[in-house]
Image 1 (cartoon, rainbow, N blue to C red):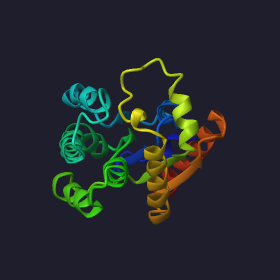
Image 2 (image 1 turned 120 degrees about the vertical axis):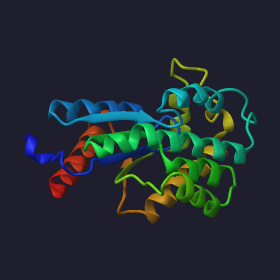
Image 3 (image 1 turned 45 degrees about the horizontal axis):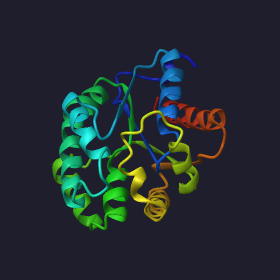
Length: 220
């Protein structure tokens, strides 16, 4: 790929990765970042909750501890506060420079985890996003779709045993999460790109890379 495929005078490209637990988002983000960097494309990878220095400090309190540590409404407000800072300090400045931003989770995770899983009215969540997070949505969202039982089994092999609050919420909860992402993907099929996360890492990576390159070419 020549450098002409990416015109840095244009607005950057915002790409999110979504899905339930154990679907391989982090792995695919790193693979895509490496591939794009080799093509001399400026890429930033980040995550939610977190992203900023302050957000990373608060992250551990949201993703660790007992499953009932937070009221679902409190969770939603915290995620929105962290997201606003994330957008202000990390995402928008990078997009303004023309970079590609790869984000591990964004607004769709809040809609699914706190909305579908936590039974918060989706209209309220969308209103919070519109009023406090600039109504910003990714240009592309890769939804790594996986049977939640398979995903939860995968998480058992992780070295990090502390960030497991959501993983501990049970299989029925995680089936709701999978169904929620599937419904969002079907509803927003122009933005979402659904991938079978049971495929090999290489096949998933190739699908993601090819789709991103096609978008870059079409925007050139």
